[in-house]
Length: 113
Image (tube, rainbow, N blue to C red; front, side):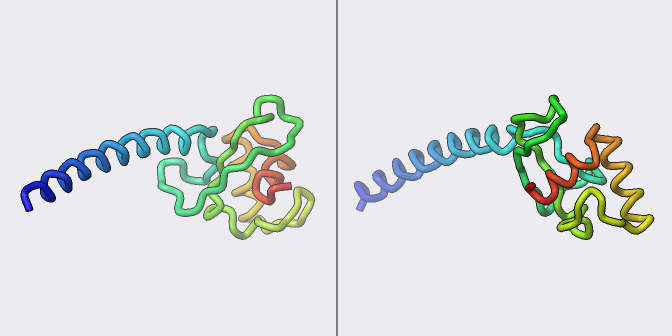
């Protein structure tokens, strides 16, 4: 019985070390994108997407871009020339100015085009 407990204890150590290494590696991979495009950067976003898009903006080419989808559900599926409500237009304008995006780049990021 003592031998079983010793093996179990050793396995716990090995598993703990493995979990720590995985967590450190995963954290590095999760954070390997630009800051998330969101309305309230100080809040935690419950639904993020990370995409790389084809854009004419050189600073965003070939980069993983993060978007807080929860902040923009009502804009999903629309295009850059779709009519928007005044509130949606204000939200969009503030966001693209804050993050230095063009309207077209924002909608490509949102819709994955």
